[in-house]
Length: 169
Image (cartoon, rainbow, N blue to C red; front, side, top):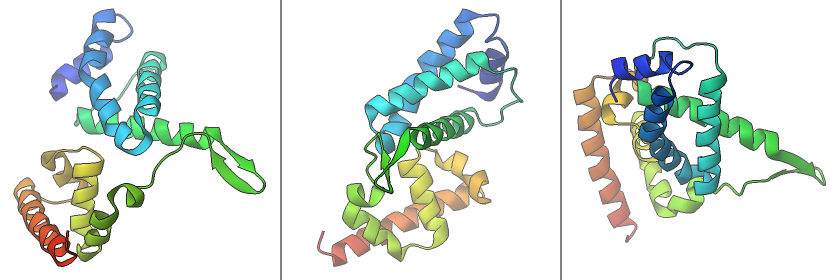
């Protein structure tokens, strides 16, 4: 969905059920996919629904330049608040109602191989593979041109492949 269409639908939310339907059809599955990698599918669906409720309750929005990035950032915030809200102390330890796996547990050897990357390369991997941003969306986020991000991405894939080979994987 392009920027102008997204902003038009966003401004029409209070007066048009069709606007909400189009936004929901376009973003619901993307939000669930984006969050399910970290939180699990059921939690991701809850957050996606909370996001659309928040859209209906909000009193206007600024002009959004990067719709997908903006949607994901809003949903990430909702998810974090939801996890914090449902955390509770048990015997002096924090217990979270949702079992959220750590990336290190999921990706093990790959996470270890990432230690060979510099901070920019780590950011690209995090944003592209774990957060679901495109390379074009990542470029302004890390202050680089798209072509440079694309080139760094190619190089870091080769570097990770080499590191994983040396680890025998």
